[in-house]
Amino acid sequence: MDIWTSIVATFALMLVAAGAGSLLARRLPEAWLGEGSIMSLKASMAMVSTMSALLLGLMVNSARYNFSEAYSDVQKYAASIQLTDLELLNYGAAACGLRHTLQDYGQQLLAETWQNNVDFSQARTDGSTLKMILRLDSQVRALEPSTESEKQARLSLLAFAHQLVEYRWKVSGLARTATPAIFIIVVISWFTLLFLYLGVFAPRNPLVAVGHV
Image (cartoon, rainbow, N blue to C red; front, side):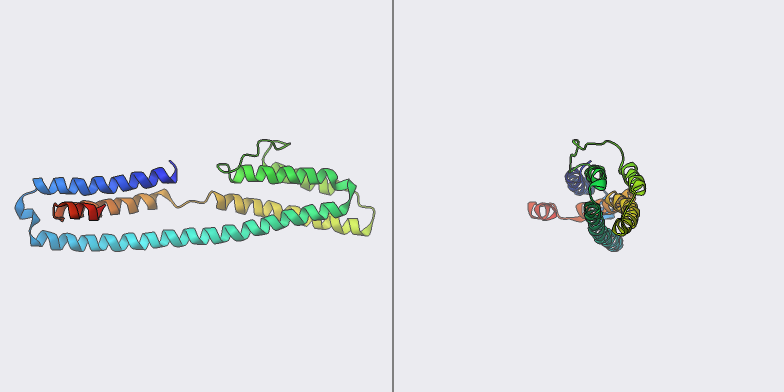
């Protein structure tokens, strides 16, 4: 279920709860709708509202933290890929094949991490990003530098390959991080209960109905 379907379904559930409360009020004995019942349910509604607000605050704060961390890691990940490509370019013709591997790795990485937004079906090589980065690491180790600068470049490339493996796990995990479904279900249930209470005790006139919507 996508996010817009969930929003519409939740909104409809609130309306149904309010309508059900209004219908229920017509069938309850008049004594049940007295001042004592109203005061008791007001206290219950206040507690449920407070708990809902606290839980929503925790969920929003958690989402904000995950977004900030993911943004930082994606920036570092992109920088590592660019620096790796630059180091391969400086290495020379012997690293030309490795640059193709790195390009395929970047395409496959986007396809795996953001599957719903990007289609990179034209990548030259199939396989998971982990296999690709391990293959890149093996290709770097197979390089035979002949000068001191090439030796330094090879060491830098090995370090970058290790960074890419590390950031792959972090970014892939954060991209799939979601708020636990149980939290969302609890909040929706509490709001449904609140609208049910409102429907029971709200005056039955068009102004109140429009205000609840």
